[in-house]
Length: 50
Image (cartoon, rainbow, N blue to C red; front, side, top):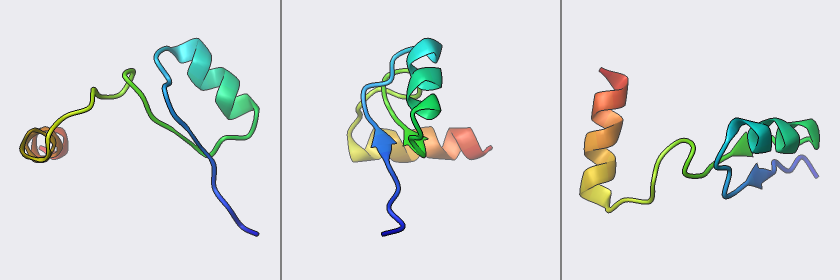
């Protein structure tokens, strides 16, 4: 089926390592960035690419 898996709610490195060990392809959560409105997200992405 060629599906990718995303683990949500990753808050620390131990959780990241655990879900990646289980075969998750991607992770997301507060460890990387907090939820934010679109304008704040665009500013965050601009700063991250600079």
